[in-house]
Image (cartoon, rainbow, N blue to C red):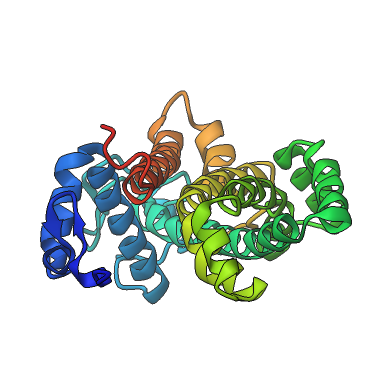
Length: 311
């Protein structure tokens, strides 16, 4: 008699016992195996909560675009002249609270990156899955288009298109989402080409499974690991590109708080006398990109059976 899936042992432990582990036990095991990934995951969660709080206005103590010339360039951990406000990170050259602007900028950068990564991975992964599984002339045409789009660096192409179409954060969002599709197509195509030759794919075909079922039931789940780490990479790149566009003045437009615009505006003008105006948004960008990449790598290693035992 063939044992059912619930009776098969995995590493000497019955499968039903593995399935019964509570979520906190799995998270603790992940933290012990991947401490840097766990710390980065916590940082990503805090950043996401901060962005959601900024969206609802819960974590923004003061109006991030309100001017107050009397409190301009207030230092870190200082009060306003009338004692009604407390500035954790001080104020900029026109009296706007830096802490509120950093939190508000997280909303733009985080949701910009998440949206670009979701669109690019979903569309690019679907195209890569279909083209590589079908093969032939369809795959050839798709890959030539991908090669053509990848000949020009992403940032340079994004700057050129946004410059022609006009500045604006939403224009930059859709342009970057479209330009980010080729990379998932190439990565998922390579993963699918390797997976579709496995024995279990042949077994599924021999049992009469249709191509649609094989693609989405057997192939797609086994290429989720590279899709996850690719999504984290695209998210980080999207945040950097958004900051670059805003830095050049063709992304988020004043007075919208943007980390990139803060670097090029008062951050550049007052860097010699008040370096915190540039260091704070620059540090925010660095922390988000670092945490996203490290968590994506750790999650990829945890989900990929070939890398699960590596440290």
